[in-house]
Length: 49
Image (cartoon, rainbow, N blue to C red; front, side, top):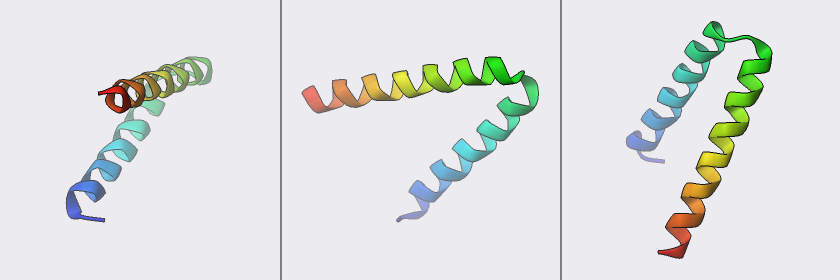
């Protein structure tokens, strides 16, 4: 994995930690589901291009 990929992993992990400190568990579950759906839709759009 190149350093750019590692940077994205570190960024995602850092953002997840920061977000988790600001929201309650129920809100985190909704956010997790939303971001999963967003990522899935982006992947579908990219695959269809």
